[in-house]
Image (cartoon, rainbow, N blue to C red; front, top):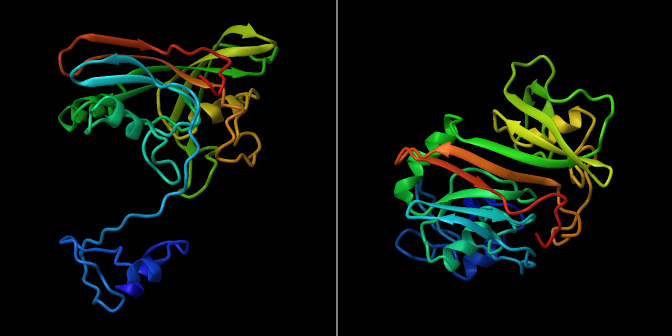
Amino acid sequence: MGAWLRHRLPEHVDVPGMLAQGRFVDEDGRALGEADPYAPQRLVWFHRDLRDEPEVPGRIHVVHRDERLVVVDKPPFLATIPRGGHVMQSVVVRLRAELDLPELSPLHRLDRITSGLLMLATEQRWRGAYQTAFERHAVDKTYRALAPLRADLELPTVVRNHIRKERGTWCAEVVPGAPVNAETRVELEHEVDGRGVYRLTPRTGRTHQLRLHLLGLGIPIVDDPLYPVVRDVAVDDFRRPLQLLAAEVAFTDPVDGQPRQFRSVRSLPLTAQG
């Protein structure tokens, strides 16, 4: 087991030390030893050491709550689910405790640095119906972004292309000539402080789709840490939030057939305090 664990886990995990401390256990709670035989399909449990997480500023606004759904308006820099170095500082962990909803779980993705509306199911039994609505593109989502103005850019326009993101890489890329898998309608709503507030209506939900589509139009989103240039930003640097807001969501409730529409309480430009 010792050899398998060292092969299976990242180098920064102190496998010998954790084995010596009895921190790897099987499904019966028995501590595993270095020389224990490896067995396929065996369940192994352990708790990894977590760093002290800096508290993410900004408030999680609960904009709607009922028996089945919780809709929140999250601040920038707060992860949706526990992942990597963001565990306690995540929407799910915070709200499970604050709302006393131990089964609370998100119904769609919202990047850590993106602000705005996030829908969650109160219990596991409600997840299927709502997740199916997202998978069938039956949920209309509207975003707003703060980006440069271009006098020569004809708007509204619809951007269609193929976006690919390789596992383990930070940035996604547009693949010329490949079949279209990403589509966004882009409109200019108004100007603020010499920049444009753009209304973005995606028909698909590719990773970094909106950020890449505005970049391709020559109007990259303000304070994007990846596009057009990757910036080395510390995990606890909350000074420059990405100016992208999940602003509206509308759909027909798959459980009771009622129309649903929710709006963010935030507006552009965004601040770290939300």
